[in-house]
Amino acid sequence: MLKSLKYILVVIICIFIKINIDAQNSIHHKKIELYVDSVFCGMEVEVPVDTLAVKLVNKEWDEEEKVYAIYYWISSNIQYDYESFKNGAGIKNTMENDIVNETFKQKKAVCEGYSYLFKHMCDIVGVESMIIIGYSRYELYEAGMPLNSPTHAWNAVKINNRWKLLDATWASSKEYRIYYFLTPPEEFVVNHYPENKEWQLLEDNVSKNEFDSYPYISPEYFKLGFKSDYPKKGLIKTTTKGVVNLNISMPNDLEFMLKLYDYEVGEWVSNMDFKITRCEDKGDIRINLQKKGKYLLQVDVMRQDSGTYTITQGILGYTLLNE
Image (tube, rainbow, N blue to C red; front, side, top):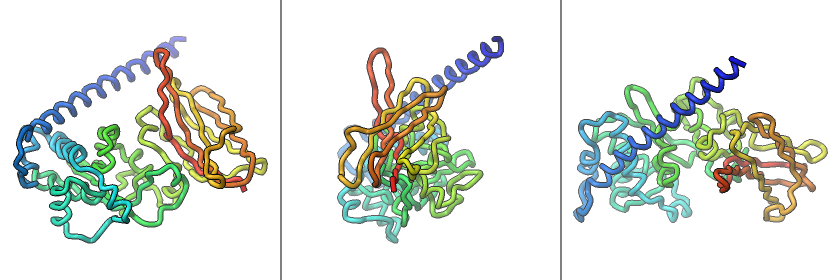
């Protein structure tokens, strides 16, 4: 009994510490955001990118604060160029200065523009950074599917003599701005795979084959408090009876919701045959596929808070094969 009480007390203390750290980080980021937003408030004259980089940072700030100011300005002011993306624009062998100047002038770019501009502005304020080229898994339908060519660019930055990872491009979606700033490497690698394995920044590197086999994992998965022990195989073949079994850890305040997309008919399955059983902090999922074919399993979660329900869609995605 005494051990149980001690365990509960430790858990409460850890939660309290995490809440306070998160609150402090939020205030810390907000302070920098307000400063950056005020730098050119009301000014109509466009300044050179080097001048902007210097004015964005307070000389008294440490390296992390300077980096966040640059990261925040880029993710807030550079729009993603969907038209260029649709036209097949990817990683090019263009001169760095040309990419930087075009991105800054047009205020829009694909990933290379974001990453090159970030590095250039870090260079100006004296912070070491790198442009990382690699593979990314961005869509649910890519679950368990091999990625054949590098199509994404992001950055590593050296803060207090330690390399950290960030993605200013994906941070242009405001809800992910904080998440993709200095993301833990073990979380970053689930959807970012660098051509040079060293830039995983992990003690034990993930192989390209392992990465290709991953499910789709949304940033919301980690933001909601899920653990990293998700089923690593994103392509799942059924048993002889058309059954799929998944065992996924889940926080106690969440419940799973499932959607199944049938690729053959091109629509979501209306009468999905499944069962979800909670066992402590695990959710056991059993799905019975009624016919042969290829399917996309979308895992959503629901949280009840004071009588209201919040649904977060697509935290995980799996490709199912019933052969």
